Length: 193
Image (cartoon, rainbow, N blue to C red; front, side, top):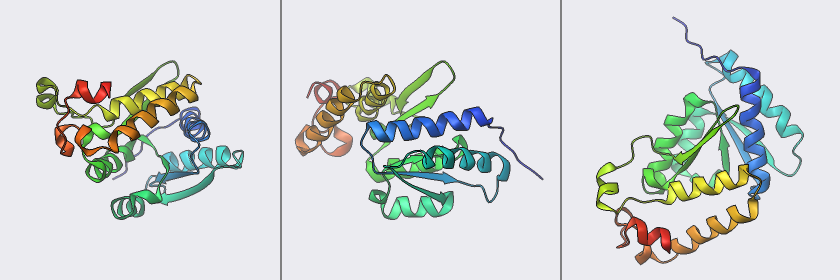
């Protein structure tokens, strides 16, 4: 039995370029490339080769590579060991699930899908809580932080910094959080704050 994902060189280059440009604009110190090149040698090997090229040209950002299994265990144990992670698409579900459980739920994590002409920015969870959304108490953090990623891609990093700072400042007061994180604020109230 064999399994293979096709990821053209151009696509994995684009992923690596986005990760490092986002890291530079966001003043990140480290990019971690997560992969399964020991299993998916061609696809993930190509991804690593292209990511290494971009990392080599980016002097101010530390670069590391980790096998997905090792990274998943470390992410669950010590999430602060990571600053910005980049990976092929098929690693995303595992990493997303760990991130959701670590930070408080699907509504907390931003995500971006990058294409040739368009990018889609969304919260990281693929199954948002529609019940919470209908009740007006869904956590909008992932969407707001996705908007900051969009601002960085549009080369507006100072606006992205302001948006991120506003989110982090709001989280300093536990009462201002949505109900899934123990607060009393609605989606709208949290967003306005």
